[in-house]
Image (cartoon, rainbow, N blue to C red; front, side):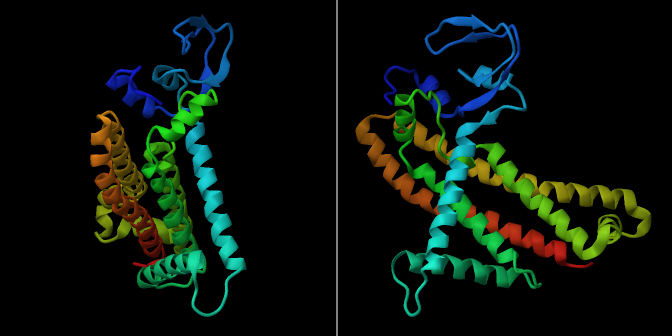
Length: 289
């Protein structure tokens, strides 16, 4: 996709807009890609033509690119790791099996050092979160114009390929972790035990309102901090790549290669932090106070 036909602001806005599908109300005036306006005679589910339309679609709008790439990367992870598991060989592993075993052993050792209870699901949860988020983050290393240009040739105007730069995706994953925290907290301690933990520790019983407020705020802050930490780091990295792509060609390669090398550390670290904090929070859900 050439940026010559756009201003810098339009280019950045274009690359930061998701492929949004939602409902526009009757009487809504739409402006097409060609600049012509159209008034809808009835409410219509459609793709957004601009950031304004995407915002006007409201809460029920769906980011098709975020969902599509997340599903694709999740299926890729399950297929590739499952293939290795079915064809695993004894002795010294080679090739992709060696890589998979390194990742599995790394996450397993990390979980054993944090989670000191018996639950066969925690290590697979940590592995899934780490690899899935890593693959999502890894898409940030694909040159920013390549896939959007292919999408435009197919008639798709907008295409963001890094799901973790969409706060809806990061918040969705963190809410999944939050529900697991609630589930295991109640399963291990019962509803009464979990409520008492929120209300009566570590302060005395007469301080229940203050203690309950602080504990509930801390509980709610866990998924929010997980989501915003991942989103903020990946969004900033994507923005840097977009800005670099606006520079002259010789400067693009001069700056993008060092930034991409540094970004490999960032995308790995963010996946590891999300995975590790998930295990830490689940371990806290098991602990009795």
